[in-house]
Image 1 (tube, rainbow, N blue to C red):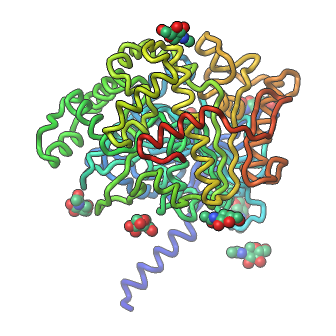
Image 2 (cartoon, rainbow, N blue to C red):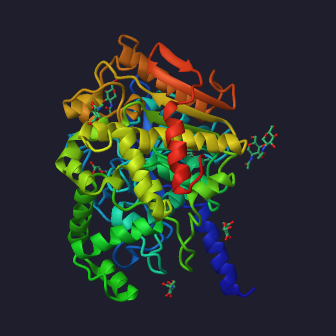
Image 3 (cartoon, rainbow, N blue to C red):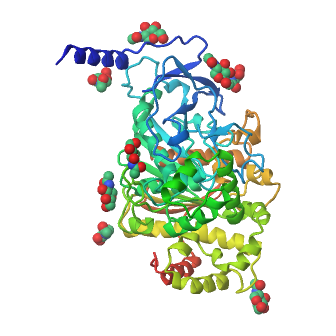
Amino acid sequence: MSTTKVLIVAMVYFSTCHAAIPDLTGCEVAAKTEQGYVCGRIRNATNGAKYASFRGMQYGTQPLGELRFMELLPPSSFDGLFNATEAGPICAQVDVFYTPNNLVAPLSSGEDCIRINVHVPYDYLPAINATSNSSNLLPVLFWIHGGSFSYGSGDADVHGPEYLMTKDVILVTINYRLHVFGFLSLDNEYIPGNNGLRDCITALKWVQSNIRNFGGDPARVTIAGQSAGGVIAHLLSISNVTQGLFQQVMALSGHAIAGFYSYSPSYAKLINAIFLPAAGINPLQTPKKIYEDLVTAPLDNLLRGQKVLLDKFGLVSFTPVIENAQPNFTTVIFQSPEDLLNAGAGKDYPLWIGFCSNEAADFKTRLEEVNIVTKLSLQPSLTLPLNLLYSANPLTVPVLTTLQLAEYFNVTSITLEKFLVAATDSYYKYPSHRLAFKRLRVNASNTYLIQFSYPGEKSVLKDAFSQSWSGAAHVEDIAYFFRFNHFLGPQQENELVPTSNDNIMRARIINLIYGNIIVRDAPFDLKIFQYIYIEGPYDIRDEFIIDQNDTYFSNLYSVGGLGPV
Ligand SMILES: *[C@@H]1O[C@H](CO)[C@@H](O)[C@H](O)[C@H]1NC(C)=O
Ligand SMILES: *[C@@H]1O[C@H](CO)[C@@H](O)[C@H](O)[C@H]1NC(C)=O
Ligand SMILES: *[C@@H]1O[C@H](CO)[C@@H](O)[C@H](O)[C@H]1NC(C)=O
Ligand SMILES: *[C@@H]1O[C@H](CO)[C@@H](O)[C@H](O)[C@H]1NC(C)=O
Ligand SMILES: *[C@@H]1O[C@H](CO)[C@@H](O)[C@H](O)[C@H]1NC(C)=O
Ligand SMILES: *[C@@H]1O[C@H](CO)[C@@H](O)[C@H](O)[C@H]1NC(C)=O
Ligand SMILES: *[C@@H]1O[C@H](CO)[C@@H](O)[C@H](O)[C@H]1NC(C)=O
Ligand SMILES: *[C@@H]1O[C@H](CO)[C@@H](O)[C@H](O)[C@H]1NC(C)=O
């Protein structure tokens, strides 16, 4: 070995193992990451316990400039102390759900949004220079936010950790690239699709490398998400490039075969044909030129194209897609999720499949805004579950449409109220049953099917929309374990004290998630397959009833060529 090599080896050893602890004056809590030291803040959980909160850390190199559509590069190291006291920028977006209803704070957004937030009960945060050898490591809940693959963030305005931090668990939330940045697929070597999924994998790898230094156990990670986040969490669990990154999965109001999105490459083509011209890009150019135009396009042009798409489709635009392998990208979804599930993909992970009893009720305002009834009347096939519509044998679509109109719209009368019922069943409820049955068929690990129906005495979502509806709608369930800080304002002393049904419900949901999913030592962890109904704080039932709609949808999917289950 030459002298130079020895010197380099020695220097690397010195810098990685003995990096000087920076001056911590003025820093309430600090932790070490592979990139450098980070400074967080001590904050208050709802029960008065303290938690350490590290926000806005960078889990990859920011995808700026020519990196815009590339797989993320590892984060770069830094000297000194990274200020992780406040959230970083959220991903550039057109938000049609949270912002219009005052559920989030107006925040800075941009493409430098590859951020991760780690919240730790204070007593479990290791000393900054402790050897990572605690026997006291906590399980980790890794949360993937919802928002139709198009908007939202992991920030504490909606995903307030204040309730969960009353338990012995570490909460990790992330931002991942959204809409065109995260989910555009040109099905070529430049942009194969699924960048947002790969971002989540990069974040999970960051967790594996770093979470011990925050007191977390990298061998007890639950990935969870709601809506689009549930789709992503579940897709990651049926992919073959995620082994060892997590141990169990919670998919709320969304999973790999949810009916509100399509993974079909033909859907991606349709979306692109609308998006590219709307963003000012000529779709008739060579693939290389289209790619170059996308990389150099001003952010505003791409957001303008995104708005056109959302106004056309209502809530969803770009989505995860079946990819073809490409040299510079990790292939996450190489086959149809239906086929992957049939072959048993992901069956060894325990899975919590959640949905709400009246999912689509809070889409009403948005769907009125985009004049959905007119659109459906012009193209009634759009009343079908979208995964079925774009994956079915095209010749069967007229028959499928006729069946769906007869089942939900009295053949010819398309109204918004009827569409909300059809959407609840087609997008959420039946696909959840279908997924559970697929798991039964392959002898999968513990599977819970959870229907959340509690209307709330004072529901955050009903208040935000100034509307009421029966049961629980999309997003209402998560408000019982995340504090909606922006909407609710400062914490009250009694939010988890059993003085009201809502508070009792919060405590019960937190216990269910903590006990049944995160540590799995609680009462429901008894059987392999359970259907649990959550109607109210005193009404959490465990029973199994075959839904009459299942027969209808099984037939519909059979006619479309996807098989009864
Ligand atoms: C936490 O609560 C204490 C009082 O119990 C208060 O003094 C402190 O300012 C609170 N911290 C934050 C970050 O809100
Ligand atoms: C960290 O950032 C916060 C919010 O921007 C700021 O108030 C604080 O002074 C910063 N701390 C340091 C040590 O720079
Ligand atoms: C750890 O850091 C503290 C100051 O933050 C220092 O007092 C202590 O000596 C350090 N311990 C070791 C083992 O380096
Ligand atoms: C962790 O600590 C235990 C007990 O103190 C010790 O036996 C073990 O060797 C340590 N492991 C590592 C990797 O340092
Ligand atoms: C995942 O599965 C595909 C299709 O069977 C295969 O081509 C690929 O090599 C697999 N990847 C890994 C990492 O196992
Ligand atoms: C893949 O990445 C390498 C290195 O950045 C680059 O030279 C090559 O052109 C890329 N291939 C494609 C198909 O983009
Ligand atoms: C369905 O249409 C038939 C015939 O037009 C009408 O008699 C019936 O009342 C309608 N049912 C509902 C539920 O709207
Ligand atoms: C599932 O389990 C049953 C009963 O233990 C067994 O008969 C069947 O062969 C198993 N099926 C698969 C696909 O492993």
